[in-house]
Length: 298
Ligand SMILES: Cc1cc2nc3c(=O)[nH]c(=O)nc-3n(C[C@H](O)[C@H](O)[C@H](O)COP(=O)(O)OP(=O)(O)OC[C@H]3O[C@@H](n4cnc5c(N)ncnc54)[C@H](O)[C@@H]3O)c2cc1C
Image: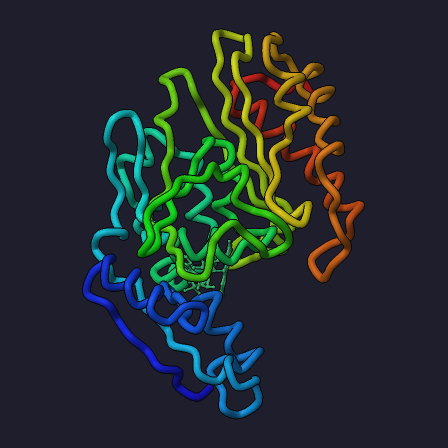
């Protein structure tokens, strides 16, 4: 791969100004773990095969901007910087205490080498159906803060993914923050990823479940899945069926069946659509039982 023009702004404002000045010609790079393999495929940086405009793209590196690499809490909202790495998220005591489902998801991304570079903003911006942090963030009812030289806007994550590998993000915008409302003390979450091997695997199915319980009664349910539809999806019918019910194994299994209303898994190299359908239902049921403390009689 031939080198593209590469700039590393010293501040967020400078990064936004560079993106604005270059319009759609500039391309954000954070960890590069999605972008570099993609560049090899399409020869974006080329000269040697891409079209003219692709050949002249400038990479704007945001990976080391301190303003957007940390994790903090203010006024009932957890802020995860758009360029926070999976390793940072996996090691955050604040997230472990208040948003453990995200920590669990980040820990399953790739290998330690990948997690040291891969960022949460890159995971969301790539918008792969199997992006592991997306279901966790959907179940946490997170939003994203998008900034450009023109200003800042906030979008709920549920409205961010607009289609297969498409998002709300404009070319001159950056994901600067992921905003997670601090869950109540009664919340508990579970994330489970099914891959073809136990490490460094892309999800065949992944599920994040966050429940708010009062004894056996489910007060609130948020369940999201990856790799079973063109975009990461919430299982709204399952959530509605759980809320207000006393949970036992029978109720959980009955509700988990409704997940089929929201998924449209495809056959691919990692598994058939039918396999994904069955695994999704089983994992949804298991994560509900674990998050609610329901004992499975079987
Ligand atoms: C070996 C390997 C294993 C992997 N395993 C997994 C896995 O298990 N689970 C998983 O979900 N993913 C996995 N991935 C994919 C990848 O690591 C993640 O999607 C990662 O989070 C991407 O982040 P990045 O910082 O590397 O993004 P980059 O490659 O730097 O960027 C990706 C895209 O996002 C844009 N972008 C990056 N940051 C921002 C931002 N803040 N604002 C706006 N746009 C931005 C870039 O312009 C580019 O289009 C794997 C990748 C590799 C190479």
